[in-house]
Length: 335
Image 1 (tube, helix red, strand yellow):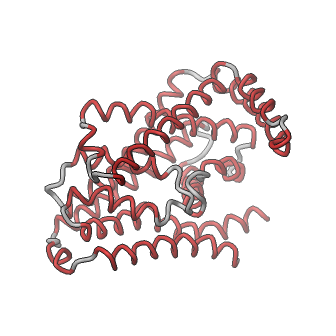
Image 2: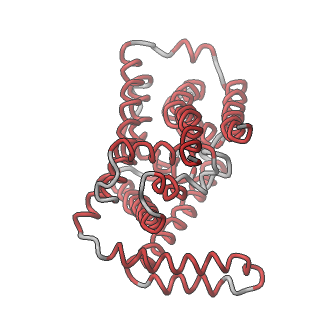
Image 3: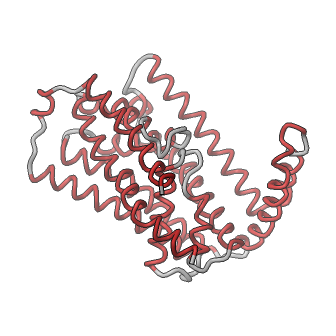
């Protein structure tokens, strides 16, 4: 019980610590008073919760589609929430999807098929990023997306984004090759790589991964186009809904801010958060949000207020849900 409590306490301490530090450094009582709390503000917060509900619907829909409706809506939502909790208490570089096969096993999906589905979700998420990010620059200028912080901070974030985006493209190509073209070849490269002395301890896992990729590729290549299109539609619903949370909050609190730019910048924020070393991006998220959106508001204090609402809706709620669900899940699993 203590270890599970620690999983929740650590990211909360990190996140709240950064928020307190930012408030101590940037908060202005005049800026707080400038916020016009009204029915529109309340409406924006409600819309943000609805948008987040759309994300959970999209994730559950995708699990249902990928399992050929073997998972009920209740089971799909349970798997979704457990994955979200795992993402919240682990570094974002690890993510919760890696354990989705474990959660699906509890719902009657065997590990082999669960691995196939896990690789499918990973491929679809990466494919969405690879396609969507270049489309942004057709409609939003690079200056509007990256011109928020001139100097070394802005240049550093721009460089970091393109490096991470390049890594996502590489992962997508490897996944596509491993699934559709030559799963044995990709697994073979990893197996050869682990033959070197420094990486030999990972060789058994590389051998197992090669076997899994071959089986996964055979299964996924046999799927009809309609299966992939439905899963891709659910993926788009998931990510767009998550980005719209911030749009809704800005609409309610800072109505004059450009909605298209707000939406576009969410791609940059979430791309950078994929390499955050802290649990669920704690600390990094709050700092990045205020840095990245402060220029659209004119006052970092207001950006901090929006960042707190954003993190409650997209992060802290999953810590609370996980604290309720995980003990019951572990207890049932032992039985």
